[in-house]
Length: 245
Ligand SMILES: [Zn+2]
Image 1 (cartoon, rainbow, N blue to C red):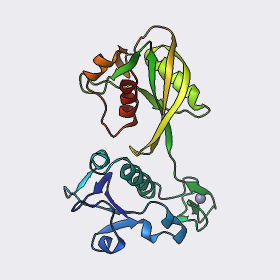
Image 2 (cartoon, rainbow, N blue to C red):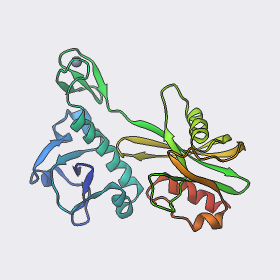
Image 3 (cartoon, protein in one colour):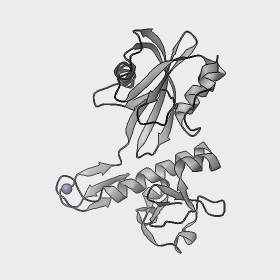
Image 4 (tube, protein in one colour):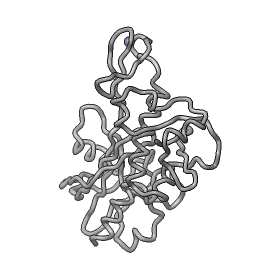
């Protein structure tokens, strides 16, 4: 069972996955242990309020415990956040009760059933003749670069999102979109879907609002930049480019 205080996770004496006995000594606000039996197959979590430095960010957990622990804890945090933030039926205000049959919560008044929501987002490494497209976001520290990313909008296939995001952010068109891999990204509830793509036409023109600067970088130039945290799929995409060029 993972123990969260807001979006931080407890790592105590080298452990980040605790048994129910351990949890009983904490001041728990909510816990998956109170849910029906079928929910216990899901990630287990307990929600506490605690300022102890033993609680660390999930990115730090990735560095300590690796990608599998990060994914499991990330899934648990998405559920914990859903129970924190989604308290009553948005339609009629009735109380929600967890379903015994699936992972939904049913309104005791109007009967509507709700499921935990995730926001799919794409991230794409675009290549042109041995160079990688990297962009500097206006919100980032100076000199930091990464690949293009953005949320999937209703009505879009993932390929449509890839094309739209690249066109919106840097004004070029891409082709040859290939699936690369995915990652739980619980900040707050994304599923990142990674792709590679080939440049097809246009000249780079940053949008100026989200992207301040963008360009094509060869492997040696990429290695000199401030790149994304190793915990992210962005980092895997960039390393894949470096490994194959
Ligand atoms: Zn309702």
